[in-house]
Image 1 (tube, rainbow, N blue to C red):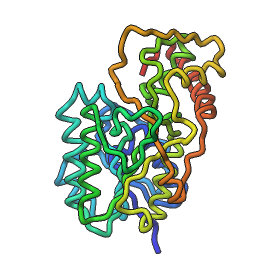
Image 2 (image 1 turned 45 degrees about the horizontal axis):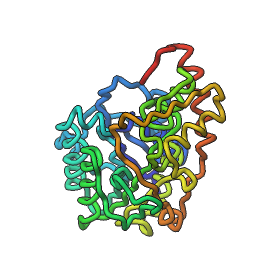
Image 3 (image 1 turned 90 degrees about the vertical axis):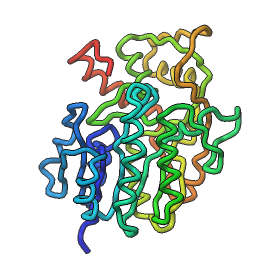
Image 4 (image 1 turned 30 degrees about the vertical axis):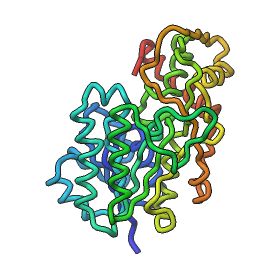
Length: 315
């Protein structure tokens, strides 16, 4: 039996750049489709690997998709306009990439081709205090980002073709295509660079997960596809259902000079506030295990390098 082949759309992004390496290390053949809209070169370290290929193109190009999709065993559509601010500033791209491109991919693929789709647990919106959101909790996205991702998930799970969807917690950790706008990454950057942060709505909670746990969960889903298919799964750290203030204090444990200023007047434009249960995924055999403390240590090391080269770096 030959190597299983994987197509990752948006493969040079934050998650894709890590997932590609993990898949290659496990013996998969990996092709990344990306339009390199951010001028990133995060995949060049895999160029030596004969099992890695890159296709320059747009995930919305149906002619291209029709040409390449039949070649793969597994499809992982990571390409997306990610986050509330980016989707708000580019609403057409958000809809066409986050939703329309998923519909096209699903229409083109054959039933035997596995799809593992990353949704976001921001679809839970504003939860009930003290109550964990499970996969049976109603989705209530409060942003265009959440709406497009949840609508795409709904389409996949209601279709006659099989799929697995993962509702990702807020991801943290380092990647060849680094993102500093994600909450843990952002707060740690503030600590390392500025030594201070101003917190609005400090008690708002959410769940977190390390980027390598995300990559390993995708692999777990591939390897256990028949048992897991046609269901959504929350993917996060059980012990990381915490508030923004609790997160800031965790970072302060490693950066003692970090000053946390709490502001009662003012609003965070991102109103998400929920806690999440990851039991269903654990019952399916996968548990995230890279702690926030380890991730913060990793980020501090990374920023010590990044900030030496660019002390004012903000993204």
